[in-house]
Length: 151
Image 1 (spheres, helix red, strand yellow):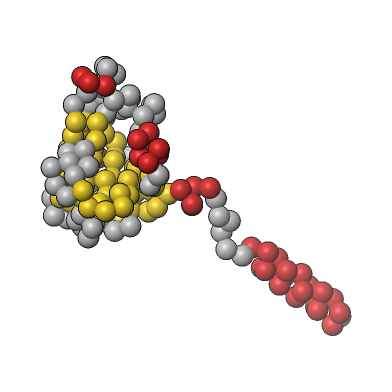
Image 2: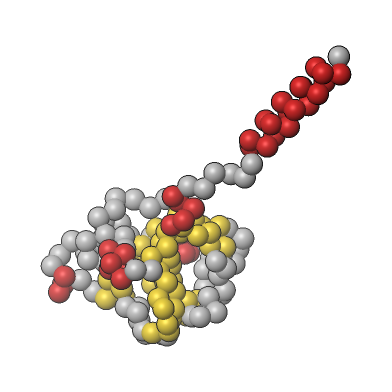
């Protein structure tokens, strides 16, 4: 009887030990949770390399309401964005080094035209981070200048 209990306890221990922490996925490496002032959370793809920053949301057909794209610039600067070859409307939120919103452009329209015909947005305020959300989400989340995001 004691042997049976020892084997059973060992088996249970092995099952518990196998569960361990949640497996790491590719998404865990390339995304970051962004907490908004209203308590909402967005999972944002992180763009740091120049090629990724240049590509951004180009050629994509959708962006879920709880998703975004977070651009990390290495230092404060005036970073203008445009919508050339972007297929969906976007809200753009510029943040300073303290992650405070310093500039926003809501519902920027896609620009399928030649690059020189596409308007440029933002870049009027010094920023380090830019968060892009699906068009209309900044209003839905109640985002305003001066609010601080966490990520």
